[in-house]
Length: 358
Ligand SMILES: *Cc1c(COP(=O)(O)O)cnc(C)c1O
Image (cartoon, rainbow, N blue to C red; front, side, top):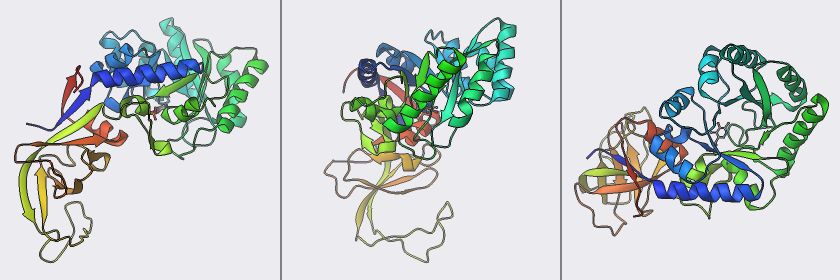
């Protein structure tokens, strides 16, 4: 059997409902971020079943697919649009995050000729140094956007924890809110949305510390994996096992832990190093770097260790487990966000959607 990704839809639905409920109590709407799983429709339906307020994806291609499948939820494009693709953005997304006036002007023109109004979220950089205008430029840019016909300045947002690893804190999110208030006061507009980050902002929600004024989060990782990588934690009130990758054992033998012969480079040009632990029970799985980002998966049984992988083989030390494993059996792996991204997009990994609990 080919390696497969088990998706437990009920857990995704429950995680969604829990995130939505906690956020609602703090006055926040939640966009379910679908880019981590390539917007697979079964998972989108589970998010919808959990009561998500809207969807968001970084890829226009995923948004087109969602629309073509009849998705009725509002969809926000999460990566600032390509100038070359504004037509599709206006056509398929209700809103997009933006930081470049040139692109926003093109969106406006496109929307005008389509007889639509496109919703613009102006991204403001509060320190993480990925997308967004600097705080001192936010008011000026907002002023220019508000003069354009075809687009509506629906709100502002920020991104944290992605490039610079900057944590969402009361301080930087409050700064976003005050930028929003000064835009409203100086331009005489009212902003519908102040979007305060993603999964990493859930910790502030938990502590009841989300600054008043923030009214939206865009959550992917938390709902899908129940983890918060930026804070290096699992989220105790969410399931961590909505996804399991399973791959089959094709060789199972006891072998020495140190290779014999003169050591050159491995298949990827690295110099491998080994510790002599004596003879070890090693399983080779039909899974490799061509299938999934190996650094993004971990055996569920923590007594097993991944020793390494080449393009098509994964070697796991199973000496210390008491599971009774043989040729043809599967080993289960949990996934990090990068593991999930790569497994979702991999044509070699079969996706199996399960409605029931295990
Ligand atoms: C990916 C992304 C998110 C979701 O982040 P998670 O950590 O998965 O919750 C939110 N906002 C933007 C702009 C993103 O690109």
